[in-house]
Image 1 (spheres, each protein chain N blue to C red):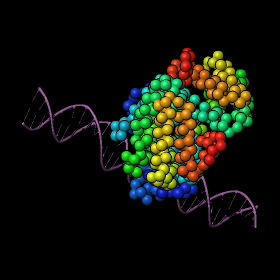
Image 2: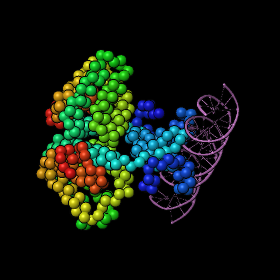
Image 3: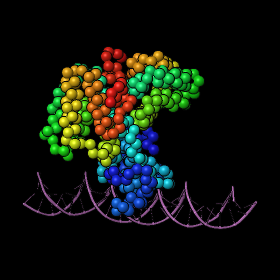
Image 4: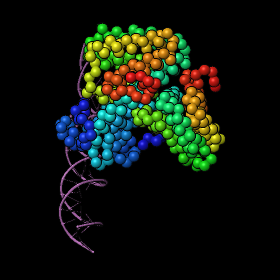
Length: 205
Length: 205
DNA sequence: CACATACGGCTTGTATCTAAGCTGTATACG
DNA sequence: CGTATACAGCTTAGATACAAGCCGTATGTG
């Protein structure tokens, strides 16, 4: 539903979409409400629905938030015990997202997602895990238009994943967080939104 | 809608609620979807809606998540400039939540909320701010049953707010985060869920 | 007696219909 | 000419009607 077709800034109505999709207005309405909750649509009562334009700052805000949640996961694991941290690191090192050669292109997104989700879930906070997955959905939809997965990049991403996992395995949460920030900054850069404030805090390009 | 009446673990249906509230199923359905998105309801397709029982661990998870997001806000502000941190600290020191004597009981919740919201918003990440507000809503609904606001506690909370704000004003983000954690751990304790893993990481009661 | 199957009662999911609200335009009035 | 007002056309919001799915029970069959 609304899979990246409507460019943004468009004012559209339920009936219009329902007719286009050959459905009733009811499921369209439900989708609209969900999309509004996820921040893709703004509903003006009795007026219509405005497609929120893909704010370039939005992608960066999403990545920052992901970093905040993943850093929390690392901190919490480190606070529990260094062993917990090391265990997660070892698990992540065996994750497909660290060995991209074996993967077909199609599962790239899913693998990357699973890698980060594993880290976040390991912290054992279901609220954070749930929020993180929601953010991931939002980011995927935002970046659905801009395909950024040339094979050259896959190796880089996998290398960054491996480095994060290694830092965790070595029981070094600060290093892991730093590498994670670099990883997400790299993603931000790939999306064209050069991370400015938090993803690259000091003086990096 | 569902303002704390249905205790939890109950399996209820749209029609049942609609009849009780003298409404049609349509708005009830919308409310159900929203409540599911917010984590209060689990919808089983073609089966019914299960009221998610108020998990005692849920409150702690929420507080942990709030801490993660507020810590992010502090870190981001600190990364921008020490002046930014200090400015926010000064603003917070003047916030009503630091001077509870002037406040009637009714606005206590709102004041506390505004205090934390101001900090999070100051970081300039709309995604984080939005998530934080959502979390606050969830927590309010969870703790709606357990009233924990004797006048004695108000002074303590205000003092903790002041201490956080002072640490920010003094340009000390680490101290601010520590005090914030103590503040939230205090809240967790007040809710009966003794913070175990992250809110009180080392060896505190 | 054990097991498969048909049926009845419940549920959600979707479609359509009616009521109500907002906006922009056209028209009447000062 | 400028302003206020009535109205038409659009929209959403809600109510009702209909279709389809799941589950537990009861019944038929080996």
